[in-house]
Image (cartoon, rainbow, N blue to C red; front, side):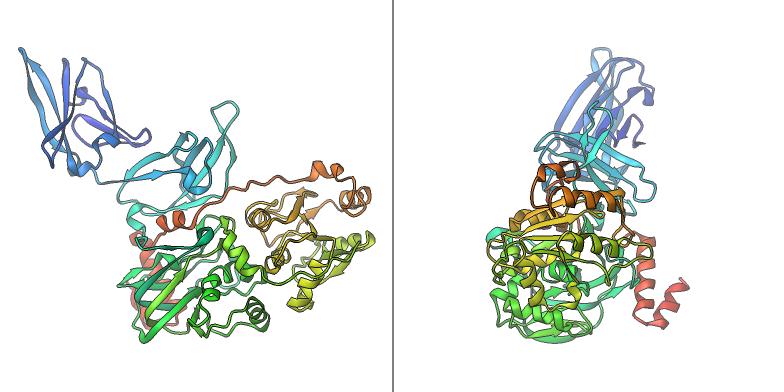
Length: 552
């Protein structure tokens, strides 16, 4: 990617260099390039270029562009005279610059950083980064959309890309990002929070209810003095779960301090993770009211979980825009696919486990919850039962009963999914051995993070014939091979070396919430902003505003 920005130089954005080419200005003999810092009037560099040659200057040496100018000189007799006078770099190019540090995203080893367009997957930047290092990328300041940031292992031949490390991340242009507050209070095991004053909170707006949760697009509302509060954002698999509403609504005023808990989520697994991600602060401050971004009270089973955790805080629902005197924003203790913090694990893992029943085997079925036409769920139930497993339907049991059944079993088997988030609520060391049948995450992300920080005896086994790519998809599992493996190992209790061909070995790489916050998109390009305005007006039922926007 190259852009000519002057009479005698070219900006090579791919190489992150300023390339001086005297021949562009018809310089015939040797030339000299001079770079000056305009603010101090000091010379930054002066280099002679041979006839027909060129000079490459790292952009870091002339950044920021607004502070530097460059001129070209030619030899005349025994002196250098100006061929092209000083030209301010900023006058011919509006650029932004970003530093990409893989270690901030849980990739400390040597890797290749890649930036792609989201639609075409076209590569805009590809750089090898040494272990513990970073790279910079310079790009036009008028960028109109976010990109995809990926980290890959170098290929064996050193030319191509190896396996991807961690999730694909959402990268936002600098001009679109919000401001991370300087005052962040840190707690044990990386838990942190901010306190903001005079904050406007507005109910979220979902764009398309009913779509798979991880791809649902919508808008949240949280502003401090008109600027979006980046700490209100949640992240899933390296991406913002939602965008910010484009306008700040009128709001009623409330006094006092509240704790922002965000969206509780209706799904069992997502409630135990995203829904409870900020609850840790409320548990430490039981007298401070909490605010759920929810139009209706939490269902009974979710309230049971809060009672088990010991949460006694008064609860408010965010049903209309409200301007609070003081709002605490706890940082989430978990972001699905990105990280799990030990402090979060301890705050929700408080229910004492039941005594283990020798020989007890439990299979947590998905039948009745995730049935698909032609799906294998009922056949997996039959196979598990034939190998001595008690088939349990978690949705038919109380929360307390689920926890008792899981913790009292020597062996728990389940298809990868929400039922395997339930052990988060259990305290103390668990001796239960968990086996997960891989579905589409292959043990990676949240499952591996929970296993590691909860110190579970947890392994994921792959019996798929074809890989499932989405959560809501029929799994094509090799039932015959699963049956054989259960037989050979007596229900995964002996001769476990025979399972090695099926064992998954997921990466445990984790990102950080602060890294995500620094990348949070709070603004958009003109076209996307116009669509956001129209969409939120339609979803909010403001038909007059929607009609007015549609005419623009």
